[in-house]
Length: 251
Image 1 (cartoon, one colour):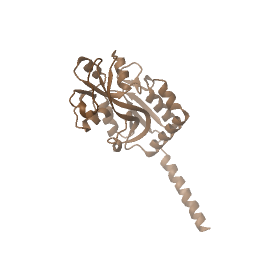
Image 2 (cartoon, one colour):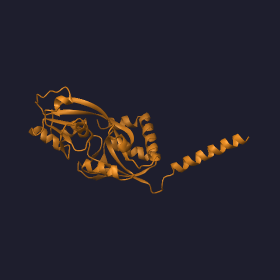
Image 3 (tube, one colour):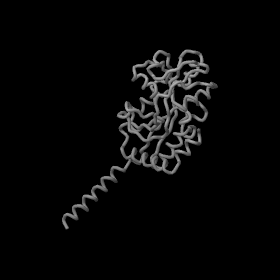
Image 4 (cartoon, helix red, strand yellow):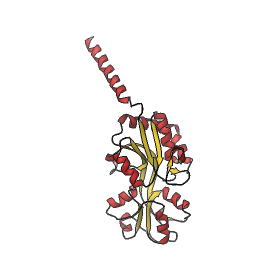
């Protein structure tokens, strides 16, 4: 009888502890940041600043629904440049950033919810280019353009390469067409989408060197309860087909 009461008391205490952990301050809110990274997140008016309903895209639609289902308040702002947003999320509690490519190097820097979407890393050449490479090692002899502090650029640098980094990935389209860079290291389908928006067609995929996944990256001080609620909501959305529908809506 005593052992039964002890077990009951222990279970009750665990339930209470769980409830306490689940309790967030009434005014708790996540500050979400994103950038123009079409078709995953983008300003409706194509500008480099937007808030809330002025932002759409595959990841933006998924993240909004995820927070709604998790019952967590947020603000959403699209800004520029990515480098600043990345460092803000590293430094400030309760900040979140998407769409952030998940990499082993970044894993310990954030808490992660995802994946929101899948992408690939590619080297693109200008129309009519005869450049052919079978590996990144072979690409070292060419001038590579990339996007500062983007996962693709960080990966190239980790391999000892020195890409010419732009503050806006759109700048690389013009550089490629003018011959200022030989190859553009970017994310697919983002690069093709950006090129089309810039009026460029016929870019060639010279090398696909990685497949990646996009996540919501949260500051490390974000409560685990927030991460768990959001991941649970996302898992349910994927099972229901919401994630697939959101993706097909833009591609």
